[in-house]
Image 1: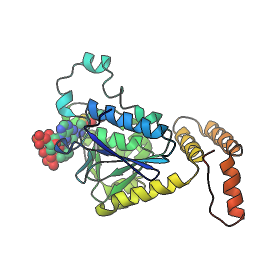
Image 2 (image 1 turned 180 degrees about the vertical axis):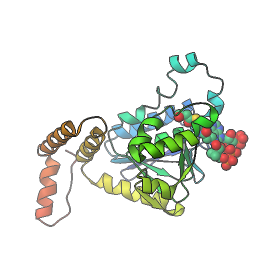
Image 3 (image 1 turned 135 degrees about the vertical axis):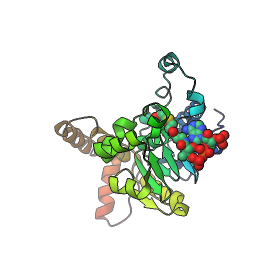
Length: 258
Ligand code: CAA
């Protein structure tokens, strides 16, 4: 696929995808989401890649779904065309860790896209919100579901009902973002976190991701059983042997991703 709305690069074992529609604040149209899905699934299938970073520009991670594309849609257009779900679910199929590096606006679908990633590193300039109510619609890519799980029902209601925009400091206090850094350090911080993850055993990192995601889908008892079986499963890998032997021999591990 020839990408027109995203930039893709590989830095060592890290795959980087930059949303790139500067004139529209990275508004997420169908073409961009198709390209993003394609790039994500390619990195996921690439044995050399251990972690993926999605980022935007200094001004906007993404200012939401593309309002100019959506404005004229009818119910039948969006229902039959599976608008929003058709190509927004690709990211959930990615089994490798994905970090969102957010500067500027992450609004509506932009906030939802960031929340679909495994964790968010924010610049001090980051702003999060679900202002869809102001344009006569509701969040449509997980905002009403992931936001209450991430930051509490009270804050999710506040943001979705008033369209208030939350700054990076509030987002960190509320638990939406894992760390905040000065804007000029955002990419370095995201790359170094991604490089650390990519230096681990990939199958074990995938098991960690799968186990944590399970916490959102099941009861505590079932989740703990799932985690225990994953833990048991690590003992069938060469990387568990290598990791523990390396610790005991006081040397860095040489994981083989097997
Ligand atoms: N869709 C399409 N175009 C958008 C856009 C969007 N979501 N957000 C910004 N743009 C465009 C603007 O129309 C403008 O284009 P022109 O220069 O051609 O006029 C350009 O980006 C720059 O935007 P502004 O001039 O508005 O810049 P600003 O700095 O004054 O404001 C902003 C920035 C606060 C992000 C403002 O643009 C804004 O409020 N954007 C819309 C945010 C929004 O409502 N997002 C939710 C969309 S619906 C959704 O996402 C559904 C879902 O859940 C999936």
